[in-house]
Image (cartoon, rainbow over all chains, first blue to last red; front, side, top):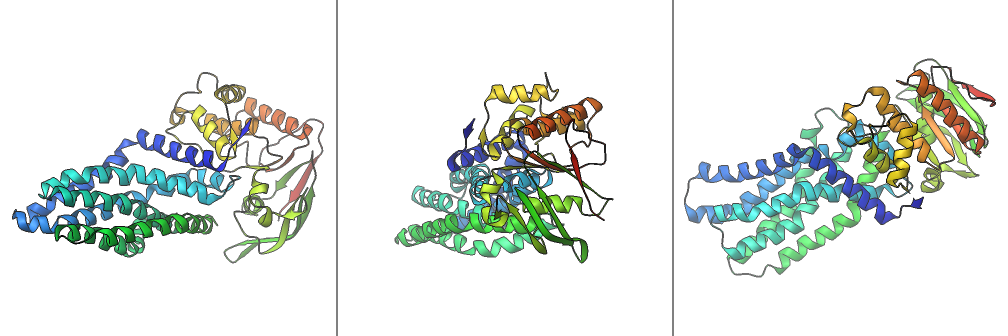
Length: 227
Length: 204
């Protein structure tokens, strides 16, 4: 019998969560359809002037992405908590942070990545320039993993609570404001011909910070929720 | 090997037990007895490190389990009320994943053999949501067959099992004890392990 290393375990958790997501595809589509719906409702609500739509496109897409990513957070740990898998994860002979990082990665691949891939289509709908769409995608690529990681802390803290969904959004959304500011800021900068480097490097810095700290914090929060 | 000294545990404001001490050596089996709500599950969960004891210490091979952490977890196996199996996955996938989580890479052949021994022949590749409660319990119990853990902590392992499966469990426990393993468990059904002295711990 071969022993698992830390990396094997990470891959195992990611693969398991992806297989599970593929077997309950409805969950994946809910997030994506919500994102498309919210973004498409805005032109209907505020009127079809291209100038105004072009201006607000980045903000609308980012806010829609933020809300869509909240939608799937509740399910991040709850299924594993209810069927006892989370107990077994805590008893794994590797650090719980690694398993948590695996779950975060899988969550991003299932709920964040589809949003990034869908964004250019919605960007066209708002008549954004190709350059702005490019920056929007880079921003979302850097930003959506942060949303998954910060969201995981909230999901772990509200685990097993009744009405945890609302509490989760109240807890996580304020923490995501910096991501929203730098993400939309980058698109605005490129539209007005300024440098995007500062916005994107700040987003990158946030991503690195989140990568280092959130798995550990989430693991601690899970231990508290299990007591 | 496993020494528990002066352990006290409470849930909310209610003190479940205090001053609990015992010692479990290789090849020994201990049954935790007590009425409903006497703290059997809490004791087992404390031994797993899920709950912090109010007082006292749990020592494994001479070191506190808080300090050993992952080294301790590599040598123990816990089976709780919850089966930790996913409805969407097949019995085979479930077993391979739970073995993976406990740090063992399981070949498909080994996993199939374990499931067949648990009486799940022909159902290895079915999604577990179509299995009965007892069959799901068997999938969870198949972990005992593929684990190399020394200490088994079993919370109501016989729940939902039929007579044949109970006999199989007794056989598995006897094999484990013969290999110098240790078992601590709770049950409300009689469990007889041939040729072994059953120690009991009563919580009141």
